[in-house]
Length: 309
Image (tube, rainbow, N blue to C red; front, side, top):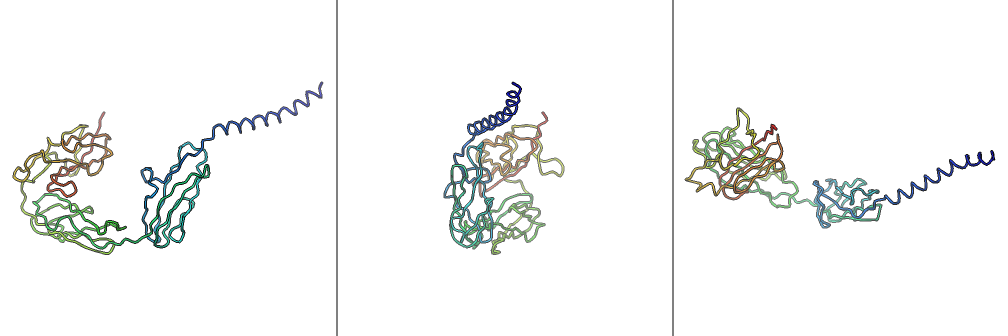
């Protein structure tokens, strides 16, 4: 009897280990989440089309991003392959490097299920061949603000960066985005220069004495700030606009757009009702007449909604 008990005690731990191991394998099998699909995605994690073209120059790199579905997939291991390493290579982390001019594709493949996704890579050098400004001559009053826009030629050029300069910044200032501000009477030439190729175009700005602006917000920042702080979550912007009836027929012709900060507020294009969604964030609003991309007249204002609740 004692020998039997001793034998049972010796065998029992082994039996329990085998049972636990076997149960664990069954549990793992039934809880394994299989990969259903995989996609290349952009910086906002939107799926890229299969024939999406990524352009880069020789020696340039591009870091791809992928998303595996479902997100709870157990095995998300993948491998990357370039279909032609003569044109580009891709490393184990999905970083592409341009090697020589040409077009090929890169493929990502899941270890689980062999699901694939691909994008086209075009190694090219679309050089800038010119630049054109939206205006060749502008007449402004002292204090007036207007934005110039630069069109890079060709539209497929890789490097669209430009620099802006004023021949006399005491008369007209210009920022990195082409926004002009008339400071005093006189004339100044605004020059835009492409970083690639140093192509230029110019616009003559004639500044006359201060007069009533064609379109202006009556809300003004306090002190030296350039930002208006508000405790109201909803504002009817048309109630805070003045216009020159000699140049603008009525406020019905004025439209509104959020230039930056559209994640923090919405604005009705026609009525000018702005609704803030997030407190303590800068929202840059433009009221304009004419084409949104090249307005005839415009007024600009920056808001920060301070929610004290």
